[in-house]
Structure formats: structure tokens, C-alpha cells
Amino acid sequence: PALSPTMTEGTLARWLKSEGDTVASGDVLAEIETDKATMEMESIDDGILGKIMVAEGTEGVAVNTPIAILLEDGDDASAADDVAAILPKPQPKPQPAAQPAAGPDSAPQAQAAAPVSSGGARIMASPLARRIATDAGVDIAGIAGSGPHGRIVKSDVEAALAGGAPKVQPAPVAGVPATRAAPPVPVPVAGGGAYTDTPHTNMRRVIAERLTQSSRDIPHFFLTVDCAIDALLNIRKELNGRTPEGDGAYKISVNDFVIRAVALAMQRVPEVNVSWMEDATRQYRDVDVAVAVATPGGLITPIIRNADQKRMAEISNEIKDLAARGRDGKLTPEEYQGGGFTISNLGMYGVKEFSAIINPPQSCILAVGAGEQRPIVKDGALSIATVMSCTLSTDHRTVDGALGAQFLAAFKALIEDPLTMLL
Image 1 (cartoon, rainbow, N blue to C red):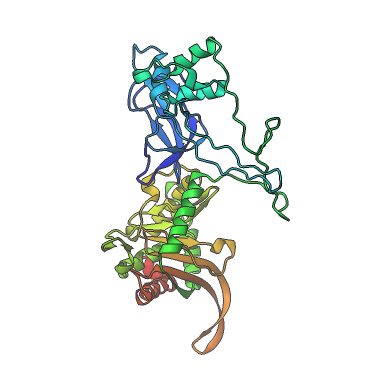
Image 2: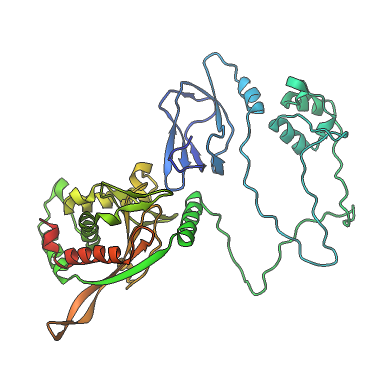
């Protein structure tokens, strides 16, 4: 099933039921990895898990692909094999073939073709029958089919094997002596040294596609502002010193202040809370702020819904919970899809300043750097202040330079006078 609106394929991470198990409606059958999280797939019917068609760990399984057969009460267990023989099988993703090294012994590789009869007509056979015949090395063209319209099914192939069907002789390939095989030889990379290839996860693949699309198709415009955060740090220290014990406990971070300031600045400059659509600019009424969180598989952006209406302690506890479940792959699609604005904070890594790629279909993302002591001029005198550089990336189709500057001015005013965020 499609476990999120944007899901087109997934990885069958783990089966929680085995063949022969009785299941009830609502029982969790398996765990499916989507592009952002691991979701539980529930049974919608009662019955017996008759046959598993897709093994756990299989990647790139398309939405609506049959992955198992559920038997009803009274069904014979062998019925699962009969149904499996006529259902479409998930097609593995094509892997790039290694190319043979160039040289006098090089030869073109034979291409796999759909089975045809000796007269050139296509053979009607179930995928399971083809696979069994291929594994056994039997020429499927010489087997008579007993299925509808002469279709060759599993039982036909098994009967042919029991009767000693002739094996297929591999056809010779031009330029390759029949006495030796010509396996593809990986091309050595000059000076490349040793390396390890890590297969792409669904999450990493989707991230790559979206960021490539964003960088290529969205006209990014960048604006940077420096914010003095000494007053913010003092208030943060005071608030954390007053935290209650028990369920109401909190520990506010600088990032929590940034989320609150972004939400209130969006309230003051609502024109940045938009998306570019094909025929119109879409204005969002709710102030939903997404926050980029690093996970082992890549970035995920859990969302603080109606962030402008939440107190600082609420924001702090909510983003900690969302970030923890995001790292564990336990977020639901509603918790990371949507949002009108994204914050990416690398200050905890000591990064002074950077520019972020917009998270489509949003129009803005704020890149937050580390707060560090810098010399500044205040009232004509040189002094030291803790300064944090923030860079706003905007989609220039919807948020031009002047509008982006208005937002940053509102944001800077809130950050530098943090008491206004607590009113």
C-alpha cells in the first residue's frame, strides 16, 4: 500500500508474521520503509497468511505490488501457489552491468530476450513457470501448457521436469569461443585505490532527487543578517534555571528561540508563507515551521504545527520528541510532510555561516550558524558581542529580495529583543 501521499515504492524491511500464521484485521503484518520513515502495514482482513511473495529486505517494491496472499477460512493451502502463479511479480531494479576491459578479446554480451517459440511466436507462461524453467535449464518452448489459452503454469513445468525434459544449450556468441565463458570484467579505475559501495536507501534516493530538482529548477536568492544574541543567551539561562520538575520540565535551546522567532516573523510578514504553484502563488493560513534533523539515512524535516501559537516550553519539548522519533524512523507522514518554512541549524557543529537548499514546495529556508564572540561597533565604540549569522534562501519567483529583507528585519528584531517573544 501507499503509506504516504508521495510514496511510489518502498523497502519491505521485516515480516512480523510467517506463512501459516492466522491474522486478524488490524494485525501488523510487516514493516515498510518509505522515503522518510519505517511504517507498519496492517491487515485489512481476517485469514491465514498463505504465501509470502516478497522477501524481507527487498528494496524498490512498487506501490500496489502483491507482496503476500491471504487465505480465507476453508481455502486449501495449495491455492496460494495457484494464485501466486498468475499474479505479477515485483520486478527487480536493473543494475548497471560491469563492462569488460577493452582489448582484443572483448566481445559484445548476449542480450536476454523474452522467451519465444521456434516459430517466433511469444510463449504464454506464468512468471513462476518461467522462473522454474530457467532455474532448471529447461527449454520452456517445448512444454505444453494446460492453463487458460494454453498458458504454461507451474504444474506443467514440474511435469516436464519429472519426465526428463531436455536442457537448454546456450547459444554461441559471435566472437567468443564456445569452450570458455566470457564473464564481464570490472574496469579498474586508474589511481582509484580501494573503495566500498554503499547501496542507496529509498530515503537517500528521494532526498537526492528532491534536492537536485530544487537546486536546478528554483531560482535561489540569498540574504544574510548578523544577530547579536547576548540578551537571548541570558534569558535562556534564566529560564532554564527556573524549570519545574516532573512532566513540566524543559530545557530551552537557542534553536527553540529561533523556531519561535521564525514563527512570529512569518506572522508579521505572511507573504513569505507561500508556495509557487503552476497557475498561482499559494498562501498558507497556518504557520507551520519545519526543522531539519540529521538521521543516519539523511535529513528529515519534522514540523511544528501552528508554531506561532505555542509557548517556548511547548516548542522545546515538541521538537525534541519529533527529532528523537525522526532519528528512529518512527514519524508518521503527517509529522514531516508540508510546512511553510524550514530551519536548518548547523551552529552546534561550529559552522559560522552557510546557505541551504530550499525544501520544495516551500519558498524559504533559514540557515543558522554558530553564535560566536565578534568585535562590533556600538554607539561609536568598539565592543565584543556574541553574534549569530543567519542566511535566508528564498524562491525568487514568490519571495523577492525586498520581501526577504522585511522578513529578516522582523526576525532580527525578535532575536535581539527576546522578551518580545515571551509576551
